[in-house]
Length: 323
Image 1 (cartoon, rainbow, N blue to C red):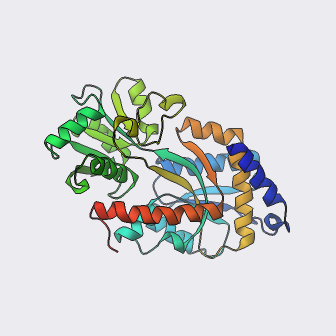
Image 2: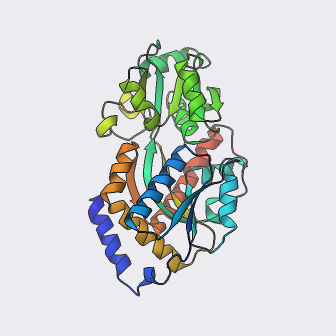
């Protein structure tokens, strides 16, 4: 079904008054990442840049890291190039959450959303020898004493990891603010803390935890998907099937600076629709344990509008909103 939808999208882009041919890059395209090398946004940008290079979908491109201030530095840099389709940036729910929490003046409406390329679910994991053997064990422990269990995640309060933690706690009748949450500056330190027994539960991406479960060093308790996943994640039970309501994914894709015109948007719609159909992208997404889920620019904006309303409620439950 997904392939046929993309095929129709490509046909519609190819038709019409050759909108996609009205603009194309005349210099190196910058793929701006608002975080340091090594994290999921950076990995995605480098995967995409590699495909651009191999397939000549985009003549020349480069990944440019602008870390700091919860992506705000990178996204401010993007908007220094308003109306210029040579600059695109990775983005995620933080583009909504940052404004709601007052950590940035920039909102998703200040940019030009281009696409969502992948979903990444969230997992709860514990050390292999943890006394917490299942999500049911964790729930019983928390209901007895909400402060008995510590949850580690990176890199900021209010992000997708914190959102899933909030959903889980609310679904078992606890105040999301009651969680003993420990925020680390990066996934590496948080993982080390969990494996060292300094924190009880690590809230993270499947990409970081499935290999450790396979090695016998960790146990994944649940995944925030609506149903069981395929492939390497097939043996991970969902929150939902274990009686709790925590379904959420962080989305990963690209946005342009404010003021992009229809020809630039049409160009990027065509490029990413072709990329999303390619076997190389699907293989890379599977390798990273992402779920390929391409949406064009117009549908991406609708998704952001819906997500904005959802996050307003969740971040308010966490006591983090400033609006």
